[in-house]
Length: 458
Ligand code: MN
Image (cartoon, rainbow, N blue to C red; front, side):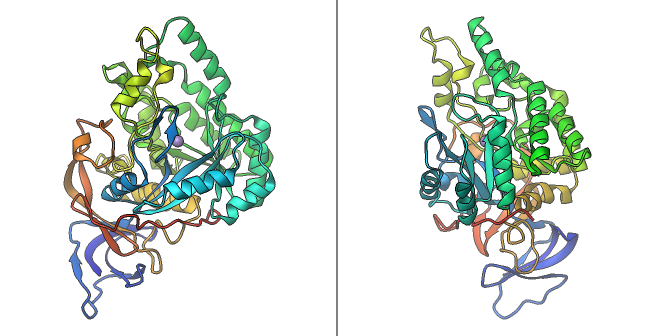
């Protein structure tokens, strides 16, 4: 297939060029005015952008959370991803305390079999681990390790574990990703709120203040510095936390930062509405002034990647949490937290291009190139150079798309962007040369996604 006459954007810049997709599913040629060969089909891509498929490096699919489960499994979630222009996902495995991490990995490998796009897995540790575990994960293509500085009951680890995992990961070519919030202080604030009868969902934001995110980023950076390690901060949500990233980087600490569309579009006011429980995510939505600071961080390179933290729950599951108290009163601590986003990321970040906050090249770098590089699936993912996987999005900048739940394909009954219509959406999506989405429909084979055995960061 020849994708002809589009404006190609990738690591080599923005230019009008044709892209030849080889029979092996890889990019065979990129250049101006390529001549069609034999029976090759030619698709006119004039007035569109031809870009590498999106790489979403922070998802949660199939995941049980308390009494419920996230509403997307790897089948529905990756179909929606494809329709929205994302052709690679990396999902988080969690090894709970006392659980063999390789058992957890096997569980996720089984859950992920129905995936329709290529997928990798990160490993989350919730306690100290032996070096052979880190080495074994790297051997299995899991080269990134997540630790939590929050949720003491289930997930949080202390600084000694963080430091050791950073050292071991570095020794074996892995990267540590951290959930940066000061979990101990947050637990105290949550206990106080409940004891004082402040149980509405606005308390979710008030008990997880930005200052405690920034403090955790500072501590994480200090640990990385002491360990001689790099650090990847997941879902950065606030201006003070971004300032902490900049400060650490200025003194030479290698800190990468990720943010998510929800922190670029939504603010705390959403928690005050009648459907406030549908906007509970962690870190919480922030006051509006943080939003512009994060966009500025994207434009200046202070933030490296935009991922989704895709973690959808249906309204009834959220409300059941909210009514958990015996008298039916709200309890913000019982709402399963997380937002849908895997389908809408490329379109929402593109809005930053049309509004002049970032460039089209930034969009490709943030959504495809940088995440592929950070997590060891570069150069086969995230660019369109010859030899790369032909994961290609033909992006129509004129195409209007509602982000209401009924107009989308994620298996969830609400949308954080119910009234939003974006301009710019894929008209065609290829994965390893297969057309998998066309005009808003998934048209690929079920379960065609392949497990990505990832390498060290590049
Ligand atoms: Mn997450």
